Length: 140
Image 1: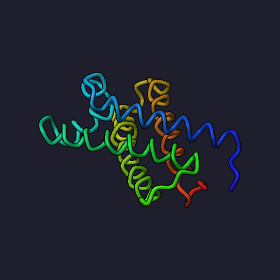
Image 2: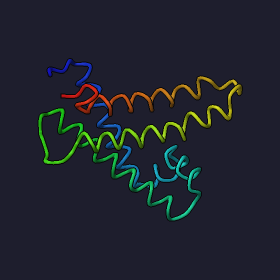
Image 3: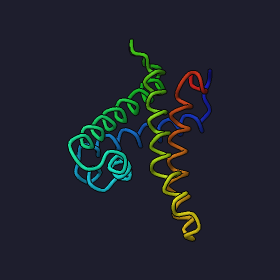
Image 4: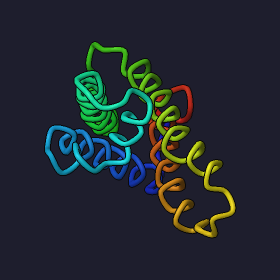
């Protein structure tokens, strides 16, 4: 399947976003203040389990970013890339629920709709990019 320039750019953007988010997952900047960390803290509380989950998510994000780039340039690995990307898509969807939907419903009517909509739309674009990178949902 031949990809258009839009799909090509979307794949590069999502791969870079995931790769950078994963790298920053091992860095204190992302580790201390990221919304993903806040969502994991909301689910598990503070402690070693939270740190382990954030590190696992960082590894998944790096792997997904690399897999998307490899697939984009027709480099195939003997790995179930679609399965890995689908697992990441499910994890990303859960994070969207924890970071955007649940807090959005709790704070509904605060008048901060635009403040809520911007990160929500960013997270949806990343989810769409992950899904488009899989063969089942539009990838090659």
